[in-house]
Every structure is written in structure tokens, then in C-alpha cells.
Image (tube, rainbow, N blue to C red; front, side, top):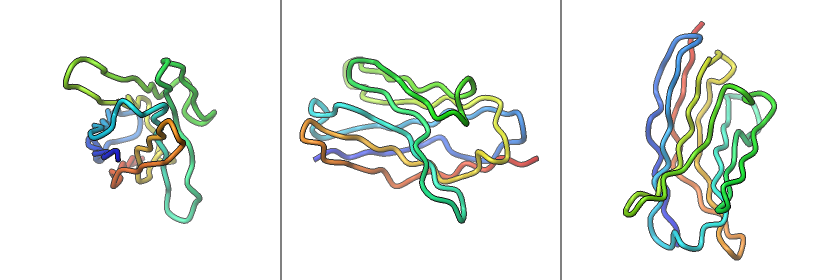
Length: 118
């Protein structure tokens, strides 16, 4: 089992920045990929960014160039970050951390709200 805990959401104005954190615990050695998804009101869940255990990253077109996913694998720190810059009102959503393990089981955090005002 893997447990994920998100933090860092909040309210910012257009053009502002936030950094989300996803702290993993449990069988973290089994994690192959961590991703950030978001769900805006009335919309389907959207993949925002992902990072593999090898360090490869990918981003949705809507956030490319503005968001950066990274990880801290130092001892006792198993955290993935999502640095969000140049935020827009359309970035408003609940952001969820997702991890997939070696047998492709998926784990989800509880979500953190991001609100961007114009």
C-alpha cells in the first residue's frame, strides 16, 4: 500500500504562483510513476503532469511552460512537487496526486483546492 498526502493549495490572483506537495509513505519503493491530476467543476479529470521513477516528465499542453513537476528523493523525503507559475483562472480545480506501482495499482491522495481569481 502507498499513502499520499497533498498540501500547498490555496487562493491566488491571476499570474500568481503556488507549489503543491505530494508526500508518499508506505511501499514507496514500488512506485513507478507519480502524476498530478485536476478536476474543475463540471469538467472531467485531467492529467496535468507526471514524473517517472527514471525522472522522465510529461505535461498537458494547457500547463506546459508554466508548471514544473519534480521530486525529492533524499533520505526520509519522498515528495513530489508541482510548481505552478503564471496561474490562470482556468487552472482553478481540485488537484490530486496519483501514484502507480510496479503492478500498476493506482493510489490517490485526498486532493487540494487551487483557486485562481482574475
